[in-house]
Length: 457
Image (tube, rainbow, N blue to C red; front, side):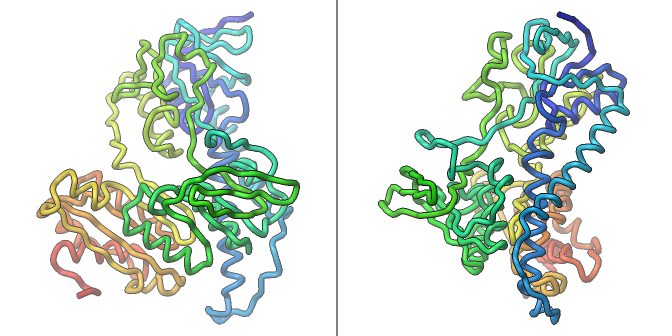
């Protein structure tokens, strides 16, 4: 048994954990980072990066299939699954190597192994104890399932979906949120027949209803089927097929069933409660500045209730590291964190939906404007439909920005600036957007809400 002492010990090397470690080291702290798998966590190795590589490959497949509409003659001969894997893994390997180099350059001690929180505060890794003046919990999340639905065989989560060595002919997806919608988009682009089952009334149900309905129209046009407002009852499988039965009595036969019903916090059997950390439905209870109920123990990322997004984890990790170093960082409200669903078309948003704004300010105090991407030159060039929707308080600031269309995720940062800085459309209208770009569609919405539309009536 060995004991060592650091200024900061971070338990978990995913997005929130390694961001905290990097920033703390940058601020002169001695840091140990405990990780049982690979630094980078789910996002780098099994989530954000590899899935977006698949989505880009899917975009290439769509362009090959539809290139004649652009005057280019090509054909899609098929999907080389082995080459696709090589491409995807190559990207992950490069990002992982770069991250390892960055961690090493900052002088962070990486401790491999499964850690547990113990009193002190400290983290136990096997027989070794790592004492920290401060300890940051960042143990991430796992793919949830439903009661009675056992993962295995042809019933898979996103992790197993990434590793499939075939393109399925038929796929059923349980859950119409971000993960389900993204995999539906990939598999449809690769030629699979896809059916999504969502218990709520719309796909991506946490988004503004305008975006949800627009995505449903786009998916319907692509031939992606979905059953909305319908609950799962049971699933059975043989060597060749999985059968999904719904509560309305209908059933779906598929090669695979992807279970995409959300992610749960990884907090069980890690010593949290024994050390005094309070859990609520598995999530770590913190105050507004991410302090747990134990002094000098903090929590960041997916184990903290709220949006489960890698960039939220980055921000929270940096936020905590700066507090530990004696700085006074500004907390970013959940509503100001941008969200992107990287399907075809993409969905991106920040701030309040029109419904949320009406509930908070009153329907008579809210104005919303929608600019159809059919009026945007660059969107027409790349062949995407969609909409830009901006919500404002009457005679007040921008409250929400909501985007639907290919590549609109690249625009959401401007929306975040508008919402975060409480900018009025009248302030934004004089600003110039380069032509032709899709960002002009945002400019058109700001112009319209300022009372001087250009390319709209």
